[in-house]
Length: 471
Image (cartoon, rainbow, N blue to C red; front, side, top):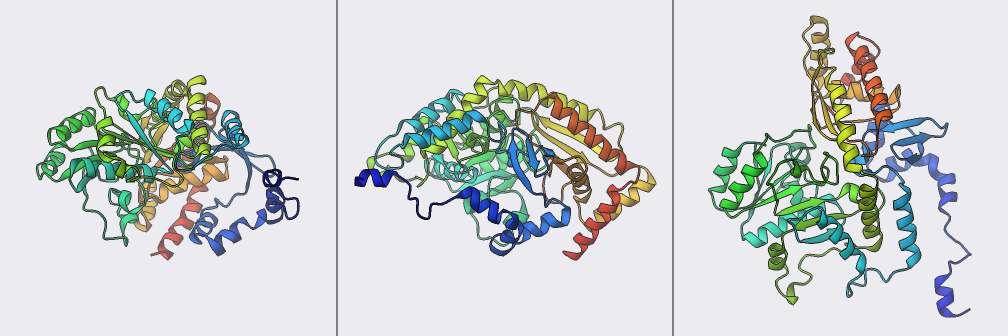
């Protein structure tokens, strides 16, 4: 056997067997996390009864060892845009591995990054260039760096309650104090209220603002800016020679019923756009910062600056193949059109329940990004129970709804943010009428139980005890 042949063949002695490893050690999953990873995660899952064992997943469903299906209305925080294990993405990844490309040489130009950039920019006609990184927070970091460099200004504005990531730069524009506490000093960035143009202009007049970064729909609470806000903000920013950054990490790639969330408002053309999550196909982490030609040319102004902003694993072949496959699926399966139709069906059916349930305060959102907000009831009996939960910790009622949706109806959802009485629905973009019916029926059953003083409140007492114990 030649050296080349031996290098290309796997060693038989001591060959790694993933299936065998999982069969032997898979049952230790919670113990392993407790011992070696974030020990609070298994503790939290045990406390709220989310400590399930899922054996496999496909499309919009998980399956346990007994073959029971669980409807996924969370999509891995939006990562699983086209569902889990889509055959087109799986084939693309098999193909790229079998191709044995000369990947990440650092000193060549492989075709896949250029092809994916071309595809992305076809959906972003006012943008010209792309930088590929590895995550949403990294896409935001790139946008912050680019905006500061090209404007020569230090400060970036962000909106209260925003979430742009958890690395130090993106944490500086994160509007939730619970994430920021204990990690100071951060960058000198400033929060403004979402939708408040006067507050934005006051900050811009100081002359040191590089950009405003904004989510077209805030993930925390599913809050949408007032109509016309993004366009007016863009005009203000440009008048003061600052940039508009659209964080489309969660709202992009069809989530809101357009390819990007900002496209719901005519005339909005951000200078920089951040995408990630669904672009991965759920397999290979990928993030992208899209921008105008002049921005990239100013950042990469000479050959000396060719690596002034780079990422070791950025543009890797597996991530690029996954991204190309995802965009192909979106086009061929008309995913955005499905989001519009299915999202409207789901939102309107849930909104129709607000008159039926006094603790259901609002249903809002766009496409398949929907917020269900709960509020103080009118009847005396329910007000007492509501007050008990609020006194212990705001957000417990929403958690009290999420748990029976999983335990009784096998539907996975999430509370939209800490100390918020909001459930956020961000299911795979491929769901249809069957999944809408299942969710609405289950939600109705849980709300009936909550309003009738049923078993839901027994779990509420457990949550109150846990909240008090954690103070």
